[in-house]
Amino acid sequence: MLVPATVEVREDNAAELARFHAIREKHGRAVPDDAEFLRALTAEGRILLAFHTRRAPSTWACWRLG
Image (cartoon, rainbow, N blue to C red; front, side, top):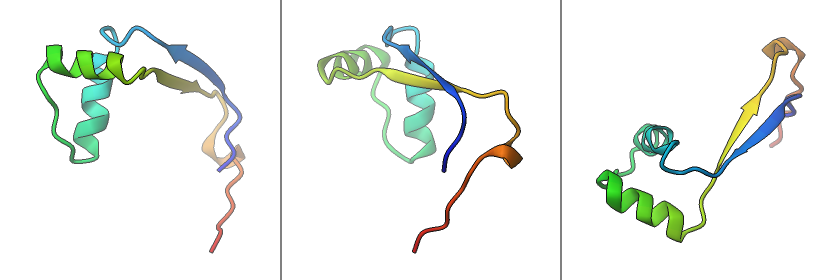
């Protein structure tokens, strides 16, 4: 899928912890307690990429492969 957007790099994992929790929960993964989770994210060098678009989904390009 090709989506016209800008990306924001969010490196403050403590500020984004709720989003990291939500991502793991959405995909059925266990979520450790906040302190342990924050340590793990930091040790792995994780960041969060936030994509922003103002264009309607009908303007996005999507290719069906396979």
